[in-house]
Image 1 (tube, helix red, strand yellow):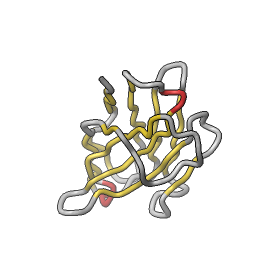
Image 2 (spheres, rainbow, N blue to C red; image 1 turned 135 degrees about the horizontal axis):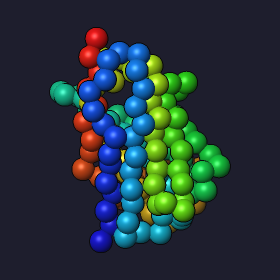
Image 3 (cartoon, rainbow, N blue to C red; image 1 turned 90 degrees about the vertical axis):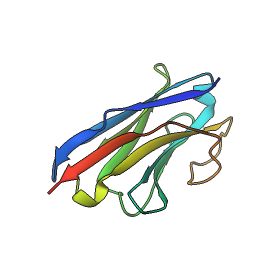
Length: 124
């Protein structure tokens, strides 16, 4: 079955960086768009970033544009989220998601599979 496993979360101070990873298995990764989302306590799930199947196209939410970078390594079946200049309001559980067999432009909807999430806590 499809598995998406996030890692790299933790506790950091404001202004620091983290890189999240999401290892995928059970799907044709190189034919899947990938996305990152987060859910903060008491809030709705929020789209952050997406990348197309080849890595040639990305799409970001305005809230993280310029601070977060999504990338992928199809040889390793892994997608990454580099997060810089972290703020306390970035505290949330971060999830990766896969849109299997989607070869179009990356977006914020239509994801078929989700990981379990990794906690990111940013202290002030």
